[in-house]
Length: 190
View 1 (cartoon, rainbow, N blue to C red):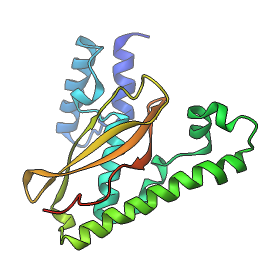
View 2: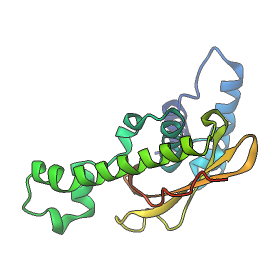
View 3: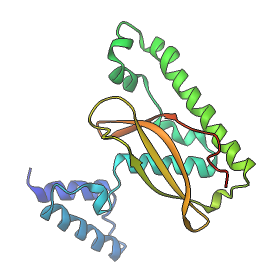
View 4: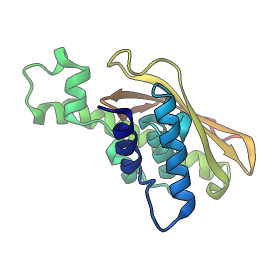
């Protein structure tokens, strides 16, 4: 496929083409130029969020809003669990995988999410002053199907210094799944 067609596909899928705003068109042209000149450059480096950034910002939103349900697209499914635990799920029905594996992981994640919310409340953290900054992945999530550690980094009250929340995640086919919140105690103590 010619590079220019690839650039247009990426740009149109990112919603950068909006004829009513000149700045959006200029931004799209800049991104297209970068893609054509540097096709191996990461999407996140040119303003197109990657799957990990989307997931991290969704986690941040859920944390700000105390809205666990908004994370539903980033929680394990039977299909994801089957991919990362082929041997363990072999011979099990989808219902069994859901009941024995997926439900346990999701319930634990929700319990830990609620503990984070308790920590926010107990330490009088103003949710409106929490700002998602960035994420850091400790290992290459594409190197295996095992969940890897990730830090989701927040600034607080206009300062870069804030709070780090450690989770595990896996990325399969450019879609990220959250598995666990690794630590819930003393995250928000100042």
